[in-house]
Image (cartoon, rainbow, N blue to C red; front, top):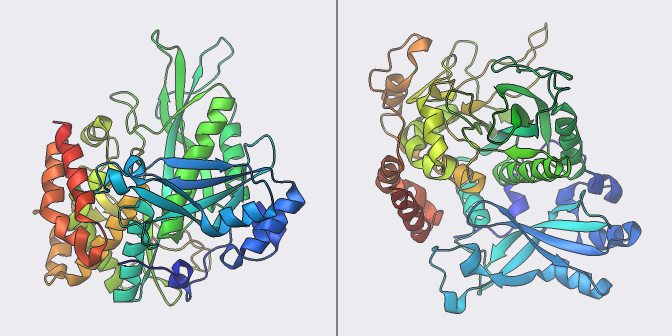
Length: 472
């Protein structure tokens, strides 16, 4: 199963316009861009190179670079893409190495001008197609689009998401440092943090390349330099804005790419590791989720405290699949240290409004004095961290929402998993998995829900289980 006309998934939803540089040059929304539009921009800007950018099976951005010889050559690249070795991109996914050619197929709405290229360069996000010409089932991009399509087709709901990208910046200590202390860096400003300028530069670049950003700030984490490497580490966060699931996943990877590029140029190190040092704040990658039906965000309880059925589906599904989704959201040894040391990290499968140790939280809404909400209500999934593969994780979230919808005793499940801080005793609450073996067991037990609708190929689940068990 695949969905060919990706943009039409959101015909009744108008996403926020990121106002990227390319959109301003072309003069129309990204969803309307054509090959001729991009060729004209390339001519005007003197573009000398083109990069096809895509996500591999490991969750990292990949690039294939071209120097177009002519307008005809550029048109061929933008219309047809180029072949690549699928067995290298998607190792252990069931692709036969003897017939492993795949095609990188440009997605024109994902084009941007490369902010780091010394000469004008056009980058285009791509999906993957197989030898038959259809989207490649093993591709994380295809898996996420299939999950998004299935959710919309069966429920009529657009599920939007945003990632909170937390990271640490490391710099060498010197005698002029005037920086802060651990747990005192939240919303600190310079000169008490050194990463403010880089963070603001990142936010500007993300806007220029069409990534929707909500805000950025310094975070609580701070680690003094030690004799081993002489680096001070401080923590920051950039929160994306709500977008459809495929765009939300791409936005996380692009933000991490920009941060790494800027940090390298500044002589710093950038880390998204879930834990930098035991006892110190770790870096999560919380996702805020918003079910939308006919333009209405349904993530907040009504004034009488009742929850929408769509929010109930999502919460109920995540309480059932949360442990299995750690296969895609918590992929390092440090992931378990972050969860076990209890610094505002989830440690039990509960949900509620106030408990930051819960798996799922309903954040407070910002309102005007007249009571009007100024940001959409969201449901915060707090389990993932900086090691996450966002495409596979969000595909699993969409599948979880459909599982919640199909749960016969959903009300009882929601009652039993509600956080004690919300006035209910979650007596049935289970701890989150604490080892790779426990995550593998959860994934095996829940695999049918992820494979439903031909979203996750069985070989992809087999590979994930094998990788988890290989950790011991």
